[in-house]
View 1 (tube, one colour):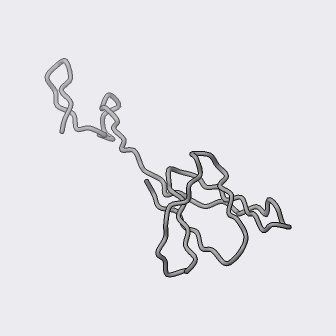
View 2 (spheres, rainbow, N blue to C red):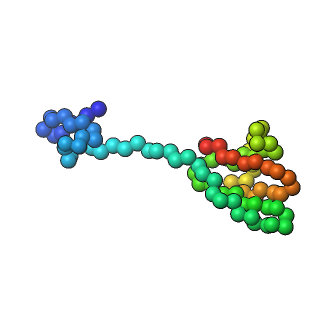
View 3 (cartoon, one colour):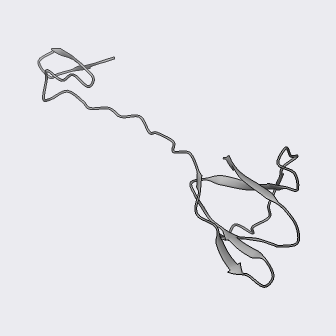
Length: 93
């Protein structure tokens, strides 16, 4: 694709040789990342899980799954209840 100047000259987009060339960029999607879990209530084994990015928190009783979405009500951090071994992961939306 090229840009046509008023004088009819064609310039490639992002041309490093022409200071008047149109600079174009592409948005980059960053992967979601789980932040360090916080022990919110040690006596009851409740952990706060928080993450960056647009993702759904999934949990399972087994590391091999199956994983199901955690209902967070759209709020963060999510509360991970104690009472046994649980595994969590993020699925990018």
